[in-house]
Length: 591
Image 1: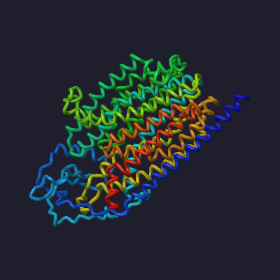
Image 2 (image 1 turned 30 degrees about the horizontal axis):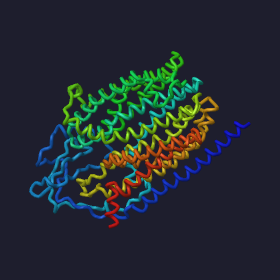
Image 3 (image 1 turned 90 degrees about the vertical axis):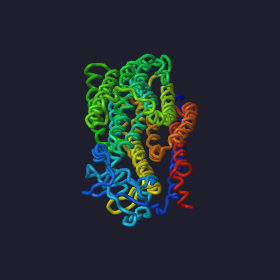
């Protein structure tokens, strides 16, 4: 009876704390939206006109040569882009020819060889109507929303596949009816994922380098960027695999105590997953390379096929061949190998890489941009994964029977239903924001578009999408919660996962703003600011993890997640209103 009353008191205290954190989260999210209302520019002033332009026309010859091979390469990839009109990028005019600026590149959706025609300033009727138009920050399903959707939908689908397959893995491991097996698999999977993401800063930089090279139509530079990433990735993956194979106990000690019962299942799972470092890194570099060429459909197809193989192999290896948790790890490894081989084959076919460059050690000069950009993101990756490892360790230490860890894994799966959509939109923000900051002139109508003012309007719109989708997805998770609870056959696990799953759903309101806002920071190139913001949030989360779980148990762990994201939200607010490059646009508008 005493134990029952204690459980009731702890449940009531957890629920009360959850309500307090929910209120604070709503206030913080509403504050950022209200601030966006205050800073949203009501009108956009005229931006400077280019002193002259070279406008692309079909059937005419260019007075200045364009590298034929380069443009053919660029056109081949730009055919995958979501571009509805021919556009030309205006060069910032220092290199003038007889007082006229030269357009650096002209990319056409329908022409493989865009041609330039000299047009004087007097004959160019450049309109700034689009820049003067007041575009609402809220979704209107207009051209801006449609353009974002074309890029976002394949990314969302791609992000959705892995968590769904993770849910399938969890489902089959749960079918073993052993909470320790679930806890061991979750611990080993967390260790592998954290180690992988800490050292895998290459893909984010690769996408940027490929995007710049592809815009110039430089096939050789694209090959260099991808090949260098693969070479560096090989050595990084080799080190990661060797450390995990050589020191499994030390690696797992980051989340499991010495002698923890779950080690029996965690060690064999981690041993097999260790061999997946290289194929996993190859796959994500391949995805980034295709994303840099604005092709998001090809990676989706590869991911879908490889993960279907994983889903089919799970029950066969785990139960038919009686391999248990090791069978789940082997199925995942096999799917990663299929994915990596597919990316390599397609990149070779599309001339994005060459074997001669992959097997040649790059020079320091060639590697410097890749390593410099990677170092800027390394701090953030370390901070993020330090938080996740701390969460996993605290969760594993809550009990010795694996119930808390299994319930935590169930709550994570609940979170990922909506989280994948918001994370995908973060990737979209990384892609479209820097693109929108470039000023363009339509070659037919002469209408000017892009620039910082246009980018600020786009940021306002995509942030509002994040806020609205966060509310919708969080509500959907709450509705689906009873069905999700059935994925575990253990009543004690389902009962322990209720309040954490509710908190995971509520946090989506905040996450929509946090994930997309941090994507904007990456798109603006403010890597150091993003890293420092994440470090501050990590410090706050670690302090919370040292306090809340002692009082509220597993619910306290998820309360610490809330603290972590509240501080990240504060970093997003500072970037968009005070410190970021687009914050200066607000000041210019109010001046």
